[in-house]
Image 1 (tube, helix red, strand yellow):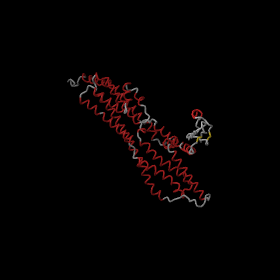
Image 2 (spheres, rainbow, N blue to C red; image 1 turned 30 degrees about the vertical axis):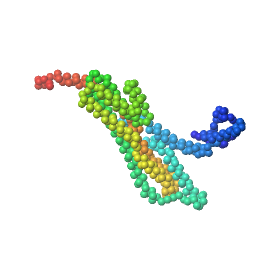
Image 3 (cartoon, one colour; image 1 turned 180 degrees about the horizontal axis):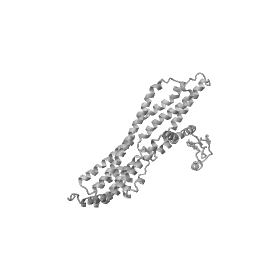
Image 4 (cartoon, rainbow, N blue to C red; image 1 turned 60 degrees about the vertical axis):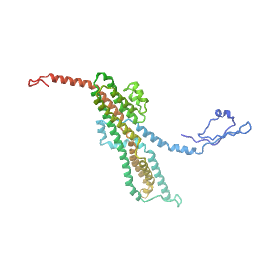
Length: 408
């Protein structure tokens, strides 16, 4: 936080050679005027502090609440979401959820992030109410007008505002659903890809390459998650899964998910497979490429900015004029009425903005861990299930037929 700067200061004479060692600026912005006359004795050196320092000091104070709200919001964006279990669903639909949600209002990042606009418009309503009260009580000269207006404009524009907020939120939710479908496709494709590799690559000489290929398949969702989530550590997620040399190549690439796809493609080429089986495995890479395309599209192309700006401007103008419109009917009640309106409408708009970027809202960490555990469990169970089925088939072949004929 900036402190008020001292007034214009007169410094003692000094030489230019010792200026940097003897002079320590006390202001953030100094205009140093060094005048060297023809004589060897220099004139005094003066400093000028910026006249806008009080304004900057006030701005720094006013910026405290928005900065704090943004910090709360961004910290919530990086919070790890968890997948729901049966107990979570039971709590989710509990009849006490309304009281629980009400009590957790002051810890909600959506509500806390709305502190700047709600506080501003509530304070603005209080100022308008105080001004109108002063005019009615003749505390101000008679030429000061009473700020009031008809409610007809609000009655006409209220449906437009409601539709604007609904369409804004619906557009954001459609992006959330699209991101969820993209990740469902990627994870389902990884499971199917791993199953096909385990079924096709059965040559003993391909055992080590098959094992590496399965690790690459498991690593792809983790790499894609780190690609779409800001602040993710791909080295930490992949260091226990891939070899050191493979991880070094991936870390040096500009696009880790595509680098892993290249590892997968090259590994398939090295497998000793029939062409038909190799083509089937190569076709499974398509779902990974489609997942990258959808995720990057959602990340790089937001809802048209003109739509977002229109919604924001509409809400701001609505609440700036709300105290004037409601004054005749509500008097000082316009202050809590403005608070309730701002908290409600801005909260709806805030939810739309948050889910517009869908990936922080999804439990990607848990989804990737679940996919990794499922594939590794399938790999571990492959041999035991194969041995069990072969033994069962052998027992069925040697079992005598009830009619005396040999089993086919």
